[in-house]
Amino acid sequence: MPGRYPVTFGEVELLADLDRPAGWVISKDGVPQSYVDLDDPTYLDFEYVQLMAIVIDLLAEGPVDAVHVGGCACTLPRYVAATRPGSRQIVVEPDGDLVQLVRDQLRLKSVPRLKVRVLDGRAATAALPDASADLFVLDAFSGATMPLDLATREYMDDVARVLRPGGTLLVNVADGKGLAFARRLLATVGGVFPHTALLAEPGVLRGRRFGNLIVTASPAELPTAGLTRRCAGGLTQARCLYGEALTNFVAGAPPLRDGDPVVTPVPPPGVFG
Image (cartoon, rainbow, N blue to C red; front, side, top):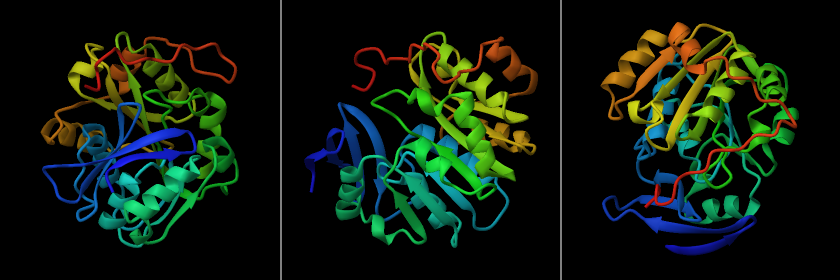
């Protein structure tokens, strides 16, 4: 089962976690893409996924209708299925061979009420009905960077169309020194959604090292007090910026538009070991 596997867009490596018998990592070009524990879907190894789970845990109780753009091993869909039984979920993943690998090797068929669509993010989102999702997770990467076409105002407008009035958006973005891309993404999301917050570890937030930042947004108010408390007290020590602090962080950065010439952040050599 461990080894290298050809997929539609290159090759991935499936690695066993020596510390957890049911733990598996999918890596591509030396960049870890997903971690799953097949026996315990509530175990989240990656720190940024733990931050995303904090947001999900603070949603209204009960099952949700969720869309996940970016699938890989489907870590968060498994988490949602385990913690919110009865949830209906759609996963969008453009790499059909990767989807098949996860079905064959990582028990994807065991996740209840989960549908996978082999499409690119924009095409799949455009096909979704209005006001059909309580949760929209955008965790799509090309290598170590977020695809530009999933970060623009035009795409965020379509995401807003799909979300219900009380729905929540979650975006995983990676950035480094200066955080120029993250600031522009926040300006873009903030131009569409009236309520926005940012979750990140202090070192990443200060631009001291390359890492993941989690953007969450909603047409409705966010549980900022709960987010702040859980970020400070969780396994991953993080900060939550919102309101004036977030406005100061964005510092007037321009939103992203289709066709804008943008230099995407590139991780420094050796950041992934």
